[in-house]
Length: 435
Image 1: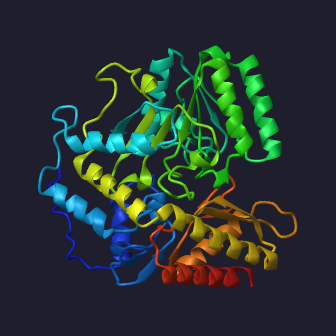
Image 2: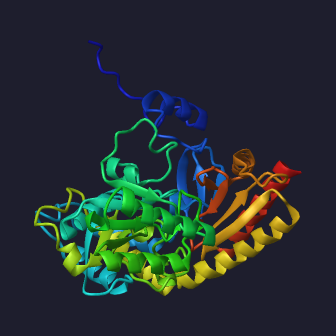
Image 3: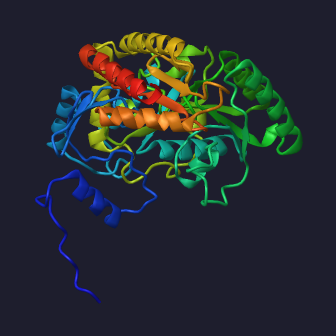
């Protein structure tokens, strides 16, 4: 047996290339990494790597940083909590801040009251627990989700996810009684969804065995596709007719991203349960399931929870995030920045035939890249634009079932000058790729 080797320290050669080689040797290839650099520090919508290069962040840690990197009020809240205690496990020794945060969430989510909330750590955890709650509350087992959906990487969450590569390939078999229908984001796909749901209820599972239908008001990884408003009303009526619970996955859409605190506020129909995570806690690990009290009380004591669920530092951060969103008017700011971005992209589309659909709600905006001759999805151009922007110091994410969509997830607190600088960099990247 070989003697254990002392790991190299952070005082080793401080280059991105050196750390990249160490990453390849120390971590598995299944954890995909986009950036070719390692972060050293960050502030609001900017970050710097270990070699001192500056980047503008239009990714927000995948929609986690609506209040920006290291917001002073969030930082102060975490620091204050750190002086008191870091962990007790809420199920062993509870703390008041967990309860008061639940009260604040209950008061603002678009769910018919009374409402209750339970906290967890990740979005996937929230989804998994929402499924448990729905099954316990209804005594049913079936779950219906949508093509193109993304609900997480844990086994049940990935079974709900409607995208094979890279999330599902090689990981089956998946939990039973999970079904998918087309996502209704247009008039045509709405008709397809209604036909598929009717066929599902005839051929695969009777509606009286369906516990829940789960959907994203705007699909995230699936391509930033807003659901058709009429489809939300249809889902609500369908669920009411058959005693099915309607679950809105607002892990990515929540906390001001769409110009409302929650995307469901755009649609005029209320879900029975919601899942929350990402930007609710300013970069710390916190998620939640909230819903009608009678539904939330379905599981018996001990059926919900987790050692780190509702961690004190994350709870403190979430209280600060809610304060910041109100004080800085981030819903209105999201709408203003989103409107500006959509207008910019539509102007680009008029000049560049490689840009296809431009869509979004609030500041949850995306544009497609297509073949100028055929209109077919163009993943290659999408990737080249993304990498050209990266070389110029702008971080962008792609998404979509066909990998041909650029999505914009800048912090809502971004300074106007930095936002405009980022748009200029994106313009330069476009000019390089499509010149």
